[in-house]
Image (tube, rainbow over all chains, first blue to last red; front, top):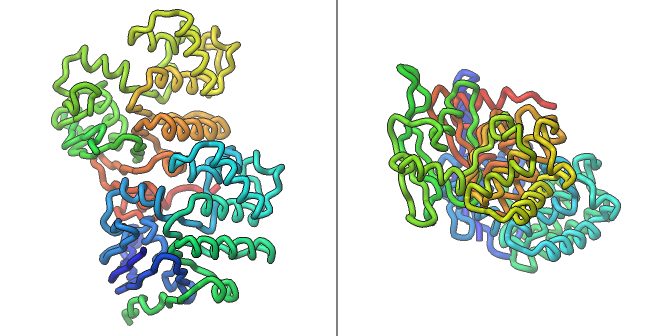
Length: 227
Length: 256
């Protein structure tokens, strides 16, 4: 479902003396449908960079990133937008929303985007919000004023609203209490059972051991530092 | 899929000074394109050339018309172009006073555009005007008030209703949220996003507010001194800018 071939990446900082920082070289691996792969490595090894490249958020300098039948490294912006709408879900660490939009609508949005009717989308949103213990009194309020943990759960609910064939999860269980952590792990297991290919970053070792089928150490793709 | 608007090598100079130079892009149905850059970078010149308010010096602007397929708007006759700007196009000005008729009631402002495309039944025009004012959250009891009695945010929403009532396929917006307080700005953003999704319209938005384009635009074009220095997916351009100027622009945002 996801195939990464020989991907490299460097950042050029034009306003800081044109410094070029190579961050990744020769990254290659695949993820099959129904499989969950955990990216590991120390902080700064390039886990998030790799994930952002798969999402099309960072430009890959070379290589191929095949998701479904789109090569993200070469696709036109509108092809990436279609991919993100239909095929590739992403749960980031932070919630980014239009202020003043009610939580229920925030969660239902990915479903409305793929053409689900409003009633079905709202019902699915409410089911997820209930499972993630967001009290019903908050559903009609904007999540911008919620606590950090609540925002993260809203973010997860939105990420799982549409059944994507491929998903990227950036620290989905960080800063959650035991009950909600369990719910999120269940959601991941259910997605795997549906055949979703998942790439995740989990600092929580128990969570990783439970849902991940394989681990990939990203530091193997870190370029050797020039002395 | 045929692009709704296809622009090739568009240039406009003011005497010896460059307005915008060699701009090329395709805009597809349902897409929102953001244009950012500092003042004087040629954003508004480009928008006005596209909308037919300024005559470009060179280049092609192909618009996919409903009846005849893609046609170069520069080669159209003036009546044809005016017909387009009354029906398939809409232009939302930065200052609502430029896009509204201040001496005519709110309902009249919306109804005027309908009458321009042939609507004559007063009851239906009024009903449609009421419906559209409702969509931009202006209550029915303000229908007969003049825009001069409205707040700035209400005027801007009225201007949007006036522009969208004829079901345009392409909307040009020049700083649509500039000068509005942040709470009204947020509501307007949500409204625009909903309209883009539900009516499938395409839009070109000129702004210098990067937070606005992040939430609203699918794609982003960065302009400097009349040239497009970088373009791509909005979040990619903002999070992984490649050009020195874009990097400077993104790193200059003040954190709230």
